Amino acid sequence: MAQGFKYVYNDYGKDPTRITELLMTDNEAGLAGEAIKVVNGRITKAGPTDAIAGFLTVNVTAGTNKETEFILAREGDWYDAPYTGTAAVGFTTGANAITLAADGLSANAATVTGGPLAAFDINTNKKTARFKVKNRQMS
Image 1 (cartoon, rainbow, N blue to C red):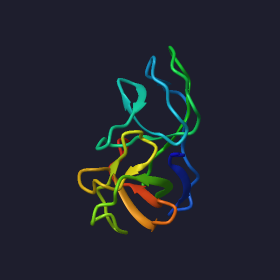
Image 2: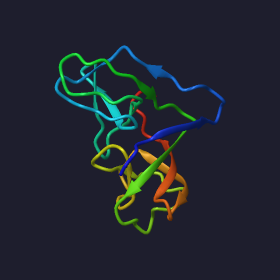
Image 3: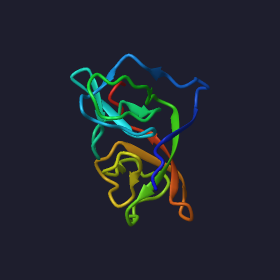
Image 4: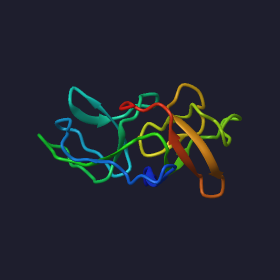
């Protein structure tokens, strides 16, 4: 179902910053569009309220010393993504503390406090929205 976060554009006209030199945490798999963070110099999945380092651009199978690539979450970047859960009353354009869903591939519309995402342009028919990452690990 979830297809993950997809980079749309940057307010300042900058191209996405791709990072390729970090390895995935051993024995952890990841999917393109999944929110990640960096722990002990390795890429790992971001939790619902974690600061986000970026989003994987490729699928990664579990294994040892797996190379990967991600787009760094920066100021001014916009991402389109699905949302899951029954939307809370506060899940509206301008909500600025939405959590990640447990899968890391979507936003959790049911929890609009304590999270790293801000919402804009919510499409209730498609259950998608445009998001900015407000709590960035690398900022």
